[in-house]
Length: 369
Image 1 (cartoon, rainbow, N blue to C red):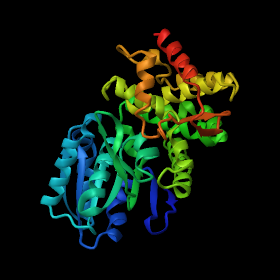
Image 2: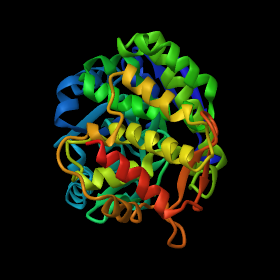
Image 3: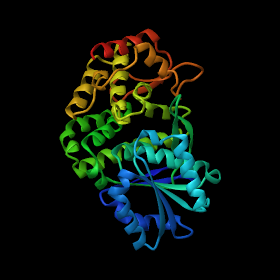
Image 4: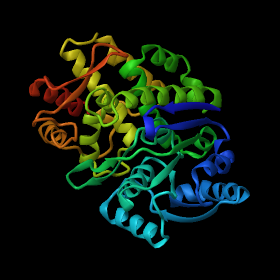
């Protein structure tokens, strides 16, 4: 087991990573519980695979539980389901010192974390992420929220978990598509700030694809370490933390354009968005032309979506996609902020990007469809 500490003073917490973490969930939760009870929120798919195992572990530790399951999918991150969760928690008389457990992927973690943030002005919650994407990204750092018809994650709050339990073994139950989508967030960490990690990912692509547990523990552990370091420096995204959004400005526009549907999973959008960000960086003369090619070659080696052409169905025009990018929550003083790169492992934030160059990158991508 690997432990990563997120150093946030009074809001600090640990992320426990390794195969079999779920088997020890009861003893890890006990120190957080003034009274031996938790409430669990999951989705139907995750509940069928993992809720029974978690309940058995809790019972062994003498912890009482109640659970709620929601529909799976990005559409669950909405006002309706937020109200559903909050009212359910209130009906269970959840108090500030109680613990709400989010058992699931990024959708459940974001939604349940936001419900915990606003319930009684803040109750504690624990993340048990069951997808690769959630383990390396959304479960760590305290970003919680829901989507709006105007855009993704535009409604939310910073609310840190009290503990994160990332069990590598549960990744065995993911479909290949869901697993690879999560890898979009893993590769992002090498691209934004650790070229050595990107080298390692290239060298270990086959082991990661077959879900070798040692390789996955290292990949998840290093990703979480990098996120923890950035979050400790910039908890509420006033500066460095924006680097974690590499690929996301393009991704969020594409997710909106595809209706937050199964046409494009979030991690797939991140991978495509990283490719577009590196292509944009290359055209602006910031990085070598070989860098976007190297990134695309690695994503193809992993069997992932790489280009706009890989998204099924129709897409809006380049102008319409650019307009959707203007709804991104990173927009500052009306200017779209981009995360670009001077090379692999050398990302930076800027709003000084010519609109015409962005449109050219998008138009070329659409033309290849």
